[in-house]
Length: 414
Ligand SMILES: Cc1cc2nc3c(=O)[nH]c(=O)nc-3n(C[C@H](O)[C@H](O)[C@H](O)COP(=O)(O)OP(=O)(O)OC[C@H]3O[C@@H](n4cnc5c(N)ncnc54)[C@H](O)[C@@H]3O)c2cc1C
Image 1 (cartoon, helix red, strand yellow):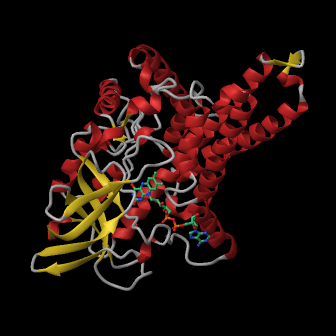
Image 2 (image 1 turned 90 degrees about the vertical axis):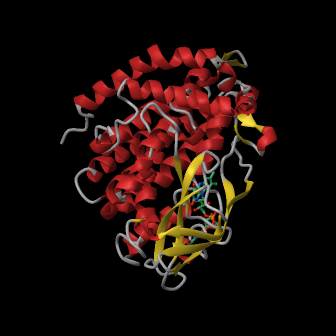
Image 3 (image 1 turned 180 degrees about the horizontal axis):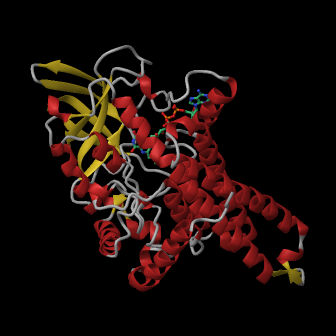
């Protein structure tokens, strides 16, 4: 058994560190209003319902262009998308490493943009898309024609198989009706991947179909934007009223859209977990460093066991999780990841919880300054708090583990 990360991955991490210093940090320094205490204000277009400002989107796009030129952006993508098909282990190690460096343009929490791109929808298009549908791939990577993901509805989130959006056949076309909620990044999307019931009953996994619906299609309407804990926000409510699409809009197969959705969230769960472990590691290290420097009652804060012990508990959890995370990612490279979705779920809920606890503890140890926007902990907390709800909430991850532990349901089910 070898518990070291392979030398190729360690070399990639070093390469990324050097790239950040030479190509990304200078750009970040020129645009500090997006990263210092003004960040939320600078990024948010308050007049346009709280969506990201154009300048902020442009800066992220420039970061991605530089990363693409340097050969990093597509590192995790399939070879046919210009990528290097990096392993799950490599991507987990990178996500953890980049988050552990703290906040910055290299790995921002907005849209989960990063010098090593996060595009859970791209492998799905590559695997199941028709040649016409695959044209979205380049548009997603370059931000020219984004494809959003529309599964959740006002009355159904965790119980997605109960969704009420319908699509009925009319000649060679389909007519879609329904409402989608938290339809992330739809403001900048060219099309939306809409999940609708085409057959079966509420609760059936089969009978849900995924349609690629251009945003310009008559009947598609952004109703309003949800303002979230972390701003800006691009998580609108989207109405679909008698939206007509051709049969070729179906991604994969009629009635088998849930599998597409599962693959999407599965791609994301281990990455979220890796980012959360890295964020926790960062918060713990920052808090320990501050506790050594800050003097209270004539001695360093770090001398107090009341300060040490909670941080030690977090550190212990972080160390164990980090190893379990890498082992799980390593296993995902060796077998069908769906077979070990209980382990992915364990990584996900424990890591996301840990990131929130570590950010909260770092805030506490930094005292009043921890509560200010001059320090990053409030931002880290607000972002990672989201991960405890999205991509399958904490309870849905627990439910998944329970299915394995108690033998409920079938392995591999949603
Ligand atoms: C910022 C943000 C971005 C998002 N982006 C997208 C997106 O791009 N596309 C998309 O389709 N969706 C998106 N979502 C939606 C997200 O996936 C859902 O919010 C999530 O799945 C939970 O669904 P819900 O909000 O309807 O909560 P509900 O399903 O109503 O759950 C409410 C609470 O009950 C708990 N619960 C549910 N079932 C059980 C159970 N069996 N046992 C115990 N507890 C249970 C849940 O964990 C939760 O705590 C986003 C959400 C947010 C906040």
